[in-house]
Amino acid sequence: EWFVRLRFSGHEHTRIVNGLPEGWKKCHIGDFVEKGIVDIQTGPFGTQLKASDYTEEGTPVINVRNIGYGDLRRDKLEYVPEDIVDRLSVHLLREGDIVFGRKGAVDRHILISNSQNGWMQGSDCIRLRSLSDEVCPVLLTFAFREPSHHEWMLIQCGNKATMASLNQGVISRIPAIVPSKIIQDEFRSFATDCLDQMTNLALQNQKLRTARDLLLPKLMSGELTI
Image 1: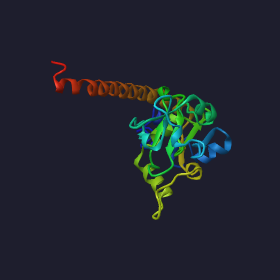
Image 2: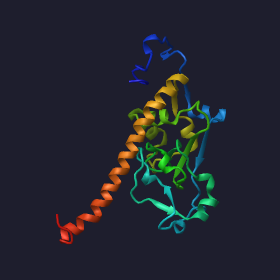
Image 3: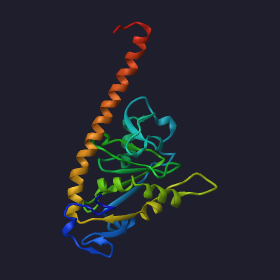
Image 4: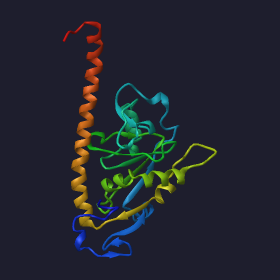
């Protein structure tokens, strides 16, 4: 409604100039990188983070299998110990980071929430970080959830001979529409509340699944009775 049909707050009184509301502009992620307000970081090389480095507990690592369409897939999360975290601290994630998968699922991404702050990006990931409030990661994550973006990514990264592969060059070419600062701030406030609620519900569902998995076998065996 806001960014496709342009029915944002105050649209009735905003002039349209060259197909965009006045004060908005079209650009690419690479333009933000050149200005120094967005940073792109590829995950650690395989020689830096090996399969033998993973442990049963520690700091969670987000690999490509954990990336959904804007959200986290908790299946088969892996962990690394403190010494690995210290050595690879450049790959630690912050709230608001956007993480892409480099192989296969190139059209997917995850917006890092507060509960994932301090986790680590895996070797098969690329991280995009906003360094200025001029770039709103909450707005970007919703733009990246659009079917048109998924199709664009698959076309840009596709190769008939090999698995789809994403690199920093492709991310730099991603088109973006930048609304006025007022609209960005208004959308960030509105959408952040929605995302917080989604995260909270997902955590509650995870706790319920854990409780079910613990209790159901006992109920089936008769160890517990209703």
